Image (cartoon, rainbow, N blue to C red):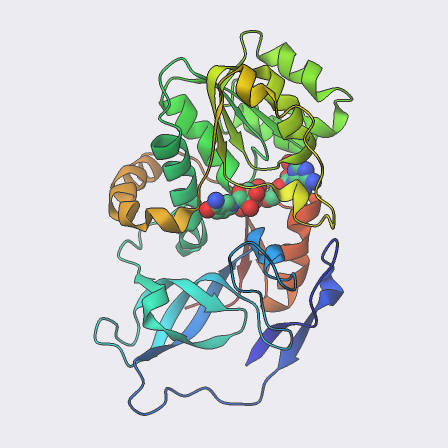
Length: 336
Ligand code: NDP
């Protein structure tokens, strides 16, 4: 059973060498009387929060990883043996699994995959937590209206590409930022963003935002934090809303960057609200009813970046922090 093990807690930027690929010789079997599931893992999701779990004594309210053990994360798997009445051998599931070929996991962290006319890999992202994040964050927390001016950072990533498309479906004006020309082109030509810019080429982010938002920003979908957030604050409109999904630019810093423009929260009466997708699991069925027809009709497009083989997982995961991924980063582990 090949596994990806975290060697030790990480400080600063994560590296491939922070993880080891090992071959465990223990044959996994469902213990007698267990109500767990024995899974064959097919796809694994690379998510920025996984870096937070590599920090010793993380204060994020999530349990840190245990050095010497395989990483855990969301994935798509096939049930090999089931001790739980709701699942049977051969079922396809998505949920919390481990970075290894075969895993023994509690059934409570899993959901059955009912719709298989779409790519299975989608259940690491658009049809799983990523889709729910974009949906709940934009529609439920953001309550957007037609004509709103929307700005999205990390706009060509897993969450960002969906938020931009949801904003266009709502009749908003939407601008995205990303770190390469290729991503900027995707934003404009594939995801339907009205405008897009490469934040790495802008010496003055404030001026860049003024260029695209002469009347200010109604909704900022925050994925990166730091300098981008600082530049956004003075460009918000009165009663604007900042939907705080993530702050990837801060996850590797030992000392987070200070925000100098925070007083604009008062001047502009800005609402800033953090949210996490697991709080919105009760929307999942409603969300699937919304998103599946859009995918089938080609009204939502979704780009995935699939690394082949568990052994390439560490490289794919650390690549999130240098913008190596184009779209949702997935690791393909095995065929059904
Ligand atoms: P992405 O697919 O967007 O991948 C991460 C991207 O972030 C990279 O490709 C890179 O793109 C960009 N990035 C990396 N470092 C920096 C930096 N220092 N400054 C600016 N941009 C950077 O990841 P996700 O869509 O999965 O996640 C996006 C955000 O959403 C993250 O902050 C994540 O933590 C958060 N999230 C929150 C959830 C919730 O429940 N609240 C659930 C899922 C994700 P580029 O080339 O453009 O720099």
